[in-house]
Image (tube, rainbow, N blue to C red; front, side, top):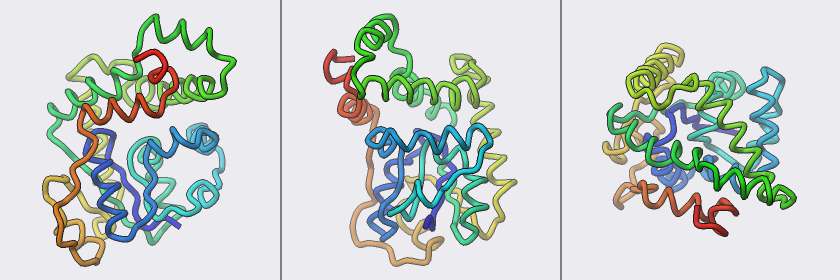
Length: 227
């Protein structure tokens, strides 16, 4: 059963938040990395994207929190299904957010001709098929959906980012919502969740370089061909 729902978009500190939540006892916390390791989960998110009923309890068996894409895209549905769950909106300076996304998750989704050639030739391999399917879904959900195929239009994308954050704040009741920057550290997060703050530094994770390493580890094409 989810107790915490992350509504912040990717590259707003979601992996640092995941680690922090797990340290606070909200273990495990679902993140995009879980989808990369369990590709069969994608069918749940595809159903949600199509407006079909979803067995969220089956998807999140063993999880107490969910952050980052693709779960964040369905925060409304998750709020309705888990009415006692609290919602955390991670935010970041919009200009810095755009640069980070462009150099990480957007860049990894646009590998060019070599990627598509190798993916086509290797489509017989289950891991490559899963990777291609995940990329197509995320294109529909994020790049062609949320950003309307105009991610490279900086002003358009930053405006979409700001609209999303405003919409979350207008949608989620104030008593259920924390608007949070990971640079704020433990105290606001722990106060919101009513748990004691650990006596250790707040986790800092998934920098641009470590993101690229995660992609290489979770993507067979990236591992085999250095993409």
